[in-house]
Image 1 (cartoon, rainbow, N blue to C red):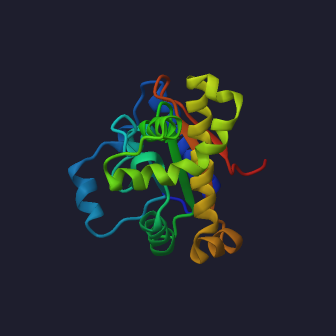
Image 2 (cartoon, rainbow, N blue to C red; image 1 turned 30 degrees about the vertical axis):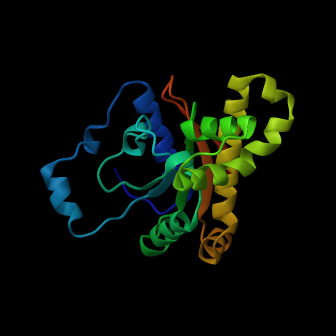
Image 3 (cartoon, one colour; image 1 turned 45 degrees about the vertical axis):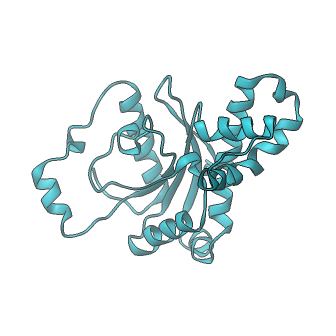
Length: 211
């Protein structure tokens, strides 16, 4: 696949790749050949950064039908943003000139449901490490628990998934001088998206460029 540093073109590549994936197609150029592995020993040039959830059902390279070296992927439960994730994004956009960052959530996210359960029942996780993830999701979920959504568990999870993506994307946009500068002066674009487990379709819904 041709490389690009332009965020709009990179976004289009991802959208086209997801259409192929959701329609059970496959780009033959995305196959991990021996020649491609050898080529990449000289260095990488990813055209997009994906900050996604660790869920085994949402592998970014497959979801977007991309191959070795195409994507710089950061995976963490709940697609949360902590200093290490910000640093990883800073590394990619500074070192490789990558100008598109996607925060990728997904339907029925376990980190979201765990957070909702904790807020509803008041029972914290026995693991301080898991709690550190839940605590970062809480700000996106707490306000929703005070609405009528609390009476509809499925719709609450749906809304919370998107709210959490928006919070993470916003944290990236405003949590780093390096990233802020590239957004303002060098065309860096940060977009929030949700992957549907049932259909395989990615919906890009937050921070999309205006036509």
